[in-house]
Amino acid sequence: LMPDQWFSQNAGPRYVQLRHRLEEAIKTGLLPASSSLPPEREIAELTGFSRVTVRKAIQEMVKDGTIEQRQGSGSFVREATQRVEQSLSHLTSFTEDMANRGMQTTSRWLERGVFMPTTEEIVTLSLTPDDQVARIYRLREAGGQPMALERAALPLDILPNPLEVVTSLYEVLAKHGHRPVRAVQKIAAVNLEPADAHLLSVPEGTAGLRIQRISYLETGRVAEFTQSIYRGDAYDFVAELRLSD
Ligand code: 16G
Image 1: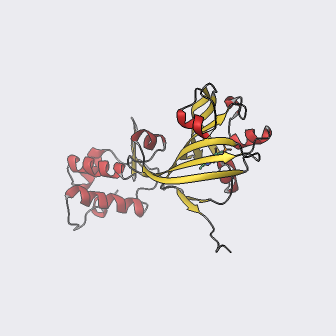
Image 2: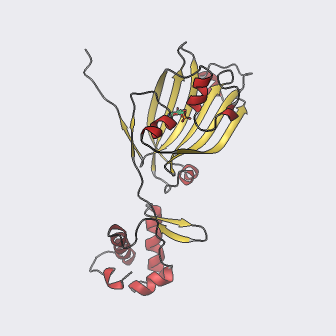
Image 3: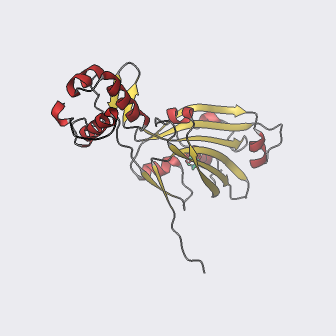
């Protein structure tokens, strides 16, 4: 890191000047993705800025997601986010969507079991208050990158053993002859809650999409009620529209 590459006649507060220098270093590959930043003290020495300024510049870059801080191992340049295009016209599963792009999926389980249903689940899945519900809640990753938090609820006779779902819910449903054939999906913008942002590895306040999917069996019965939080910075939703006749 050459100090002279970091100096410029930029106006604005000192931490903003330093931040521009660091952003420049990232853009030109001087500080490549995944590389670790030198310690604050070293950056201060190299650039002539004070440590307070260095800390403030880094804090700002952590907030906007350019830099990531890992407990005990310092600061790193974050990998650029991989965006994916997601069709809104086909009833596919996450596993299928990612496999079509050649991406491997992994899940981090947050909840998986049989529970008492919430009022919303009772209404949506047409349960009685005495029925229990199968619930699976997971962080879904593709190509090692967190993509979405998905919380699915299903009637117990449709998914008697939630533990059977290891990778694909739809695959398990298909095996039991319960693959949904139709779904209604609702999408709304949200600011990610701090806990969700943390799970999705994005800065707090990042835009997210709240997606609700209610899917139906051939018989017209509701099979699945899924509430998800998708990363706003990782998805482009695409639908083909036609002039109706
Ligand atoms: C998609 C669905 C979700 C479904 C899941 C099954 C949305 C927006 N999409 O992510 O409802 O439960 O696929 O995927 O909610 P899987 O078969 O890979 O588990």
